[in-house]
Image (cartoon, rainbow, N blue to C red):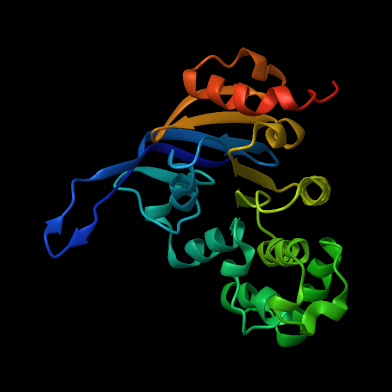
Length: 263
């Protein structure tokens, strides 16, 4: 069953200065895609290709200039107030730079509890119980709940951001370069954790990355993005068949250094 479906999305930006507006720059150009329940889809492309802009559009953080996004078959623009709240709970995002994604003055309990306060009707006691649950889900000790972000390691803080995304029991988590700032060991550990969480909860992932080796190990399907467009798509078992110039550049730069995943 399709969870999220985007049809002909486009997004353009203009920069304004004392000299006036600059020519429009197209970040996303006529993109259509779908994500099914419990599916892991990778959105792969070089820096500046538009993949982070597309991720923000799909999460509802920005509005497209053209096209529409449907959640469970209903366009976001036609959702009633209660349905919009349900969408915000169901679609969460984990960003690349975890220190910038949290308030450094909030302790971990407040960071994870923030979406619970705004997006649920849970009591304070129930919110505390849910914080305990998600910390356990991401394999962090309850003792860190009273600590500040600056007291944690990079890997721990990224798990806190994952726990915050999990707090409202989402149907889809968009991972925008969410492990790219971690070293290889921590990347492997984080992806293993995310896969385990998916097996337990049945949620879907959109995995936004520039790293083909991570795609092979985590996703079931990959979409290649270049210059604002989806230019090619394949299952991860058929990456060798990718032939678009943007795909070939990503493959030649990354894949030969890493052995293919065992079948």
